[in-house]
Length: 422
Image (tube, rainbow, N blue to C red; front, side):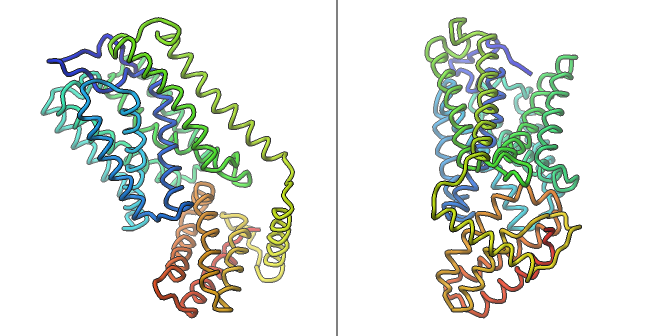
């Protein structure tokens, strides 16, 4: 699934607009997938922009970046990979819009995007006679290429989420399975399977693989992750991407896209080494940070007080007010119930502003735990997710009422009590 540099030629002065498909390409692609997803979630939830405003911002940024990309006449690494990251974000948001806003089942959206991708391929092939990435040397072909890239991201998101929910894979098994499928695709390519076919199969599969790896790093340890959090994971992946893209830019500036040279930075072996070192660095640093976080004692007195309060409240909630459901697949939901209990207390005194502030913690915590909880029981997760949205809507209404907020909070707490698997 590699395209040699000598195949990247110029047609009528219009040079190829995409990189050579090397090990570096695949590493950056996987890392950019995770960056796209975590950054969109960060803006929508942590920053508080909400999905609508986040979608609008990302759409404007994507259109702007693609205009810049289309106006260039040769491959420019930093512009190209910026477009890929933004396409990753927007492709994920398209699938989330269908699933979360319109309520379209993942099986349906997966099928729709698969058909849409097939349609794009058919039109592209009929117009150009090729689907090869090495042939992206005209503006029309580049338009087909970016339409395909956007569709593959949407399809990869839907198919990955569908497989995770329908088969209860979880992000650990997901990473192994999707990684194994990519390996099998590479083996098929080496055995003589078509280069174009294996490339696009692998390209789709990198989306769920990147998401699974990202979830493995971001999720809490009680959910099977390394508990780095979205911001640390995004920073780690972004650092690796920047290093590899800077190297690409230096090579292109010095040698051009068709011949990256054989100096200290260029050449096939050097490319493989840089890609391997970047991937290894992400793994080692990520594991090291996770271990350090797990062994580092709390030193902030205020943090200790807050933690003691949460622990006491959680203990009281689990032993006095909350029944035990050991067969519930979702597991321990105490930390969410503690926040809802705080919200209820504020609502009971008609402190709706304070409740609105506190419920933000619930939104962030629930979003952070999605990848770990959702595969355990997608039906119950969606039920809780809908009730959390109802509470958020009640508290964030233009004129919230105590009765509506109290009803939404009580409904959510009852369900948490019912589903908790402490």
